[in-house]
Length: 275
Ligand code: 2NE
Image (cartoon, rainbow, N blue to C red; front, side, top):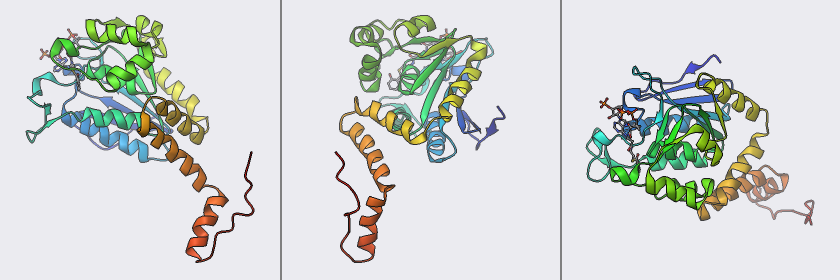
């Protein structure tokens, strides 16, 4: 694809081409671990992709390989700037802004595909988890480290992981902090497919192009329906927002608005009470 660079960031790369956005965490010397600035930049790029009506699919990946030949999707929060109350930003404020990023990925009405080569560990593992789909390279390694490094993600990182791989496996992943290879991840339903590492991006683009031939509104409603099953009132709000969007598009809803603006009673007689 003829990727066009969008904006200029320090910790990420952001590209677009043919309806696809590609967001790359670009800290390979840290196995793409994120600091608050990385997360702020990711939020800015994801927000741009959400707002861009030409974009239907976002690919999230990690830069690599590093000079030592190793690949990483993301190794979670940067432990070297972890303070007492979170990951400390340039102004000295402790943050856990990756939680905002998780919600943005989960709720944006476009398909987000994680392309995982190498390590998806800790908070980096949760990032791939909250993406709609995960395509793993054959060298991908998955795992949580929280109880080993004095941390945990009891939000999507625990509850949604259990929805994806089941309660027993999710508890194993968190309690033992083991690492799992791509094939094991595939067997537990944690990823959608495994491909040779050199084909990772091409496979992601293929999946994206296939999705882009589908109905945007149908995909949008399906994503919110999948979320609603797990996300309680927030999930229902997202799903209901789409119902409202669809209703606004009808003549029936337009009649209500027009009647108000024209200072007359609404006439809904033409619209049937469908069975
Ligand atoms: C990812 C892993 C297993 C890779 O191991 P290896 O042996 O391939 O690489 P190495 O030598 O450990 O790492 C290469 C360089 O990257 C840095 C390392 O410190 C090292 O730097 P130098 O010594 O060469 O200068 N690096 C890697 N991960 C880092 C990190 N997370 N923070 C800062 N520097 C990092 C291995 O590196 C590993 O286990 N990394 C740590 C994974 C981890 O525990 N992440 C944090 C989990 S907690 C979290 O992410 C979180 C949460 O629980 C809740 C909310 C938000 C975040």
